[in-house]
Length: 192
Length: 240
Image (cartoon, rainbow over all chains, first blue to last red; front, side):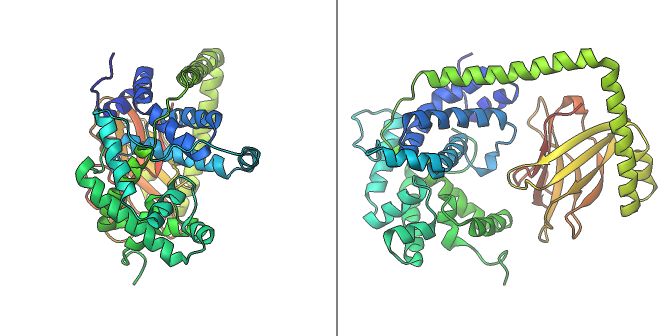
C-alpha cells in the first residue's frame, strides 16, 4: 500500500495496528531530516545512524503514546531524536570521541539548492529567517538546540549575564515565530 | 501569587528549546498544563523549534539504516509472538492456576485497601468477584504513578486503585479513558481526584469491551471534557 499523500496521523494509526509499511513510510518521509539533525548534533555518522534507528524504534514502541495536542508527528520525532542525540553528546564516551577528532561535519545553514520543491522552499524560508537574526540571538538558539546547553551553560560559555541570554533566546524565538508562522503556517496539531 | 497564576512567558522559548535546568523545566511544565494562554504560546514556539532542522543542509542516511530498523522491528514482533506461542499452550493449566492465584492475592489486597478507604458495600461486592486486571504504568510525564484497574466479570463495571499522581488545581480532574481499537472516539470510564497522598480509589464504568479496547489512559483535563485533553499520565496497552 502506497503512503504517498497519506496523512502522518493516518500512518500513526496504521502503526498502532502493527503495520510495518506505515513505519517504512514514516521513515521515508522523515528519516533524512532526522539523520541530518542527528549528524549536526553528534557529528558522527555512526552515532547519527544509531540515533535515527533508535528514534524510529521508540516511535514504534511508543506509537500508542503520541499526543497530537503537543504538535505534529515530525516535531514529535525530532524531539525524540534531539533528546537522544543530546544524551549521546553529553555521554562521557562521546566526549572522549570528540576529543580524538579534530573536525566534525557542520552542515548548518548552507546555501539552498536551486530547486522549487516544497521541501526546498521551506528550507529557504527557515534559512533566511535564521540569517535575519543578529549573531548573538542565532548563537543562543543554536547552542540551546543543537548543543543541548541550558541557558545557564550558554551564559557561562559566552561570558554573558544569564538575563541577557534569556532575553536573546526569547527575542530570537519571537522573531522566528513572526517570520515563520505566516510563511509555513506553523500550528500545532497532527497534520503533516 | 503562585506559579499557577504567574505566566511564564519569559522562559517559554527556552523551555520549547529544551534549554532550561530541570527544576525550571518542571516549573514551566506544571504551568502550561493549567494555563491555556501559555500553552498557546508554547504551541507556536514548538512550531518554530519543529522546523529548525529544516535549515540544515540535507544529508541522506545510509541505506542500511532502514534495513537495520526493519530487522529490529521484526525481531521484536517475532520474539513477542513466539513468547506467546511458547508459553500459552505449553503452560495451559499452570497459567490458569497462576492467574487465579494472582486474582486471589489481588482480591486480598483490594480488601485491605477497601478497609482503608471505606467506600461502602458496592466496591466490596465488586472486589469479591473474579475479574480482569489491567495494570497502568506512569508515562514519562508521571513515571512514579501507577494504577490497577479491576474490571468486574459482568463486563460493565469495575474499580481502580491509583497512586503517585499530584493533586490538581481547581477546575481540573483526572479522567480514565478507554481507546477503542477501531474508532477514534474515546470513552470516559471515570472522573476522579486524588487525596493528599496522591491516591484514589475509584468506581469505574467499563464503556466498551476490553477485547475491543486497544489502550486505557489517564489524563488530567478540564472538568467536563468529552475527550482527553492532557497527555497520557498513565497507560496500559496490554492485558489478559
